[in-house]
Length: 195
Image 1 (tube, rainbow, N blue to C red):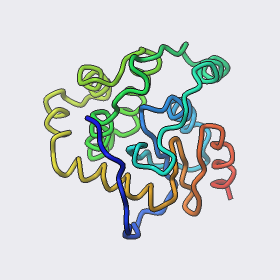
Image 2: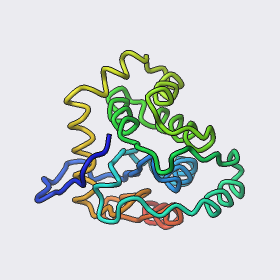
Image 3: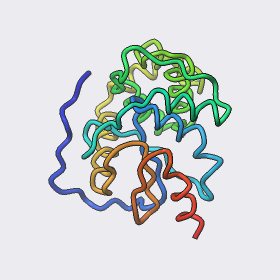
Image 4: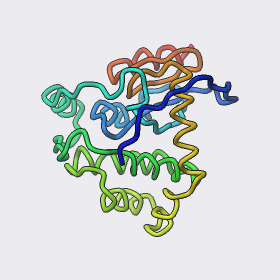
């Protein structure tokens, strides 16, 4: 499901200004960030799926060798590349928006990232259902959930929020006052959030 770039003319301020981690499964660097953000940040960051194609800089360029080296240096499973890459992440993003309502954003997201980059699977319907099962979301509920207008509206809202906050690409961390981009910016985000 390809979607055109989201254009935001005006964004309403949101009451949620706490730290947030913005990601899209189609970005391998977001996988690297997801695997360490929980242990690195001094405060909890809310995980927020967004359509990277709607952001100013879109998806970052994929450097397979650098991703593989970083994963190995961090003791992650060897990276297995999904085909195609980048893949269409729309269904997985919607599934994450649905999982948010049940408080399962992190568990679903980690399962989906690991299916993609440790399992080497594009996030097709079957793979998304496997990720859902890993965090106890029933397959029928997940399939119905991604079709809900409220789920689709939530993904639109999160993406618009990211644009309004100056999120240009993924992964990114919103500290409450600034956006820091890239897996290599997580240390700077952690330092900013520790003050």
